[in-house]
Length: 108
Length: 158
Length: 92
Image 1: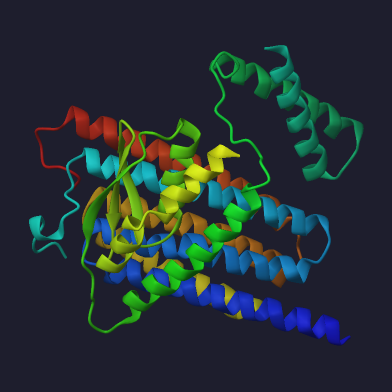
Image 2: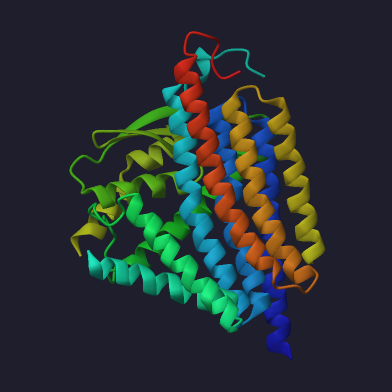
């Protein structure tokens, strides 16, 4: 009973912390001044937000097939996120979008 | 060539069985068909003809992952603090990290680890030199200390 | 508790959509769409437990796959497009 309660509290804490990071990442994606700095904010939601929320849900799932699926989703997201981020940053870089903010003044 | 076809087939079949969870003849036949289809498609794209660069699952890998997780948490807190501050205190700069002496797999590991930690972002790889965009001067200084590079290097040695 | 998490994810998706609408470059939009996609995967996983329907997890994984391939495909398209129209204004 108490072990179950501790598990519940642990998973709630994880999920709330994950929600916090996801939300902060969303705010950052709106606040940051240029494209590359926005990518940093977006990776906030992609890394710790994903890890925390999915770990919280895994704790709730317990030792079931659902937990394995959630773990697979988490591993897949953590593998693809840097790849997608690199592809995006590289495409922007090759297209000539300058990473130095002083050279792109007055952009939003 | 053939052992790689067999390995891929076994992995695909195991994934299908684990995922569907329904063991009716129709679904099993469908699973077999899609496994064969995927292998044929992979063969068409030349997947079996190229060398595979794969990470050896050495004993040091879990330790590396734990360390990476710690780094991710640390840099997440850092960047979250930057985002939430009322005045935006960022000093974006570009840092070059020389990884040309590392083998290809370690380079990929390093570049992905850099991208995974918020605050640093790999933009380009030019003959082994990673071009990394840093959000603040603190993250740039952290990166230039070179612990990430050293970890990626020690991963290869085992 | 699932509802609170789902709400936070939904708010973030709204923020990502705002960024996608604001732009200003095409890459900002792709970034926002990618973010929207990964948030959808998280939302699906949470909703699977909120409503007690574990089959949603399969959808979440399929969505993660489609999102990744989709973003790469869009980037490929944008790259080819900007290469062909390199004389014109970039990334708008």
